[in-house]
Length: 169
Image (tube, rainbow, N blue to C red; front, top):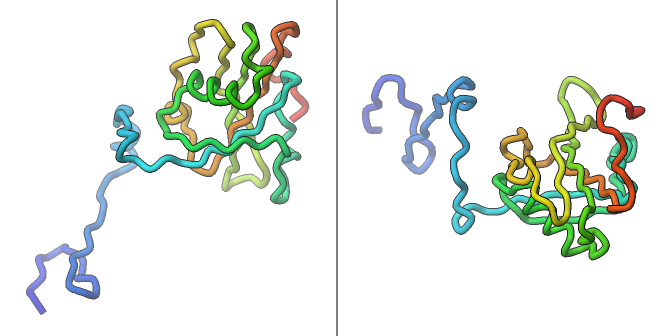
């Protein structure tokens, strides 16, 4: 066997050296968002659930392996913006194209510490109007592959329900 340098990993079967990553959590946090090369990066499957009553799905609708029936599957990247996702949803739901339609985005995720799903509202967009959240990306909101996106769509003639802690969950 070839002599090993001190501190290196033992060779894998087939003679290749295994390399261990030494990146710490702090280094990961400080790293700015790198632009994603969509030609070279494999897209992820984003499972999107929509409502058209302006309210997000209840978390119990995601329990025990169930998901709401309004699933939309989108292949996208971590740098997808809310505006970009809005336009994809509008391709599927023509009624959401009306000017003034409000889209409220939330990430639905599980936590290791607690059973069940949690929801985190991340931002909103509106058909035909520029907004501050338009350029927000999934990545910037700590979206993890495997999380769901829940989009509460409010038609233009109805005001979206007030945001905040008034929801039952």
